[in-house]
Length: 327
Image (cartoon, rainbow, N blue to C red; front, side, top):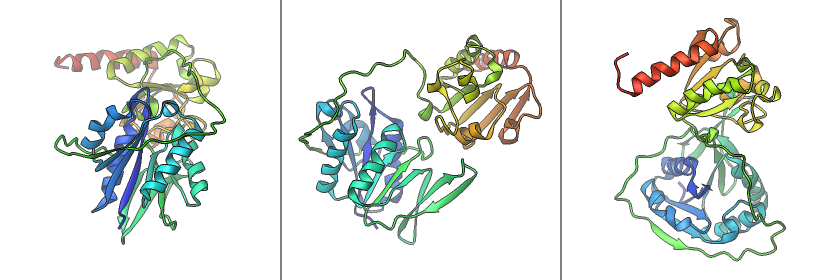
């Protein structure tokens, strides 16, 4: 089997993304006797070593450079390429995130190797790593293996369970300075829309609204339930097109692809484009006034009713449960 597996530990807002921990779990799943190596970029990368070693890293490469605090393709390309030339890994794993979707194809082209993207599972069969990934908007799953000398893949967030934290594990930490030159662009500041919501791609629970919310204010009842459950708030394209919410909330074929443990669809009819973005959720609850809505065909639980009546009732019942009351 393989000898070295390199996992890019992606950061966001100064913290490790959950998919980084899932990447280590994926590496451990196929590692056998191989060395699992985590690479983390940025000025505060050293602060992440204790987390990475608890979740399966044998060696951690710290690439401390201020040009890596924010993602830019040229800076990350230079750093990853140099790191790969130094480590010479047999397998490279990244998250199928905005960063991974942009960086992985560029890097694969530079290295002249194949890339398996958006994998939801991986196993070892006859000594080779076999990846499972969805195609045709999630209606079919295919198994793929790489014929390149270096196996390179991105994994979909929320699909590979993280390992239990092992506080006794001790990893070797290596400082790996990189000289980043000839940057075509430099990001000096990122201005974000004010949001306190959970990252949809990593949310364990999502409460999502469609045209049935009727207005911007219609999302308030969804947000109340989401806040109570610690959930993210999503939307169908119909709700976004109607200007009920921002497109950053859109889930579907042309939006975000999510795989939460629980997806609550409120006032969403269930067009195939939306289903492509959420049909792999572990449990789907649909709330819709139309008993013939397509969303009910994929839902594990369906409630026929007005979301403005049903969602507040759900919120009250969840409050009782969370408060320890007998329902």
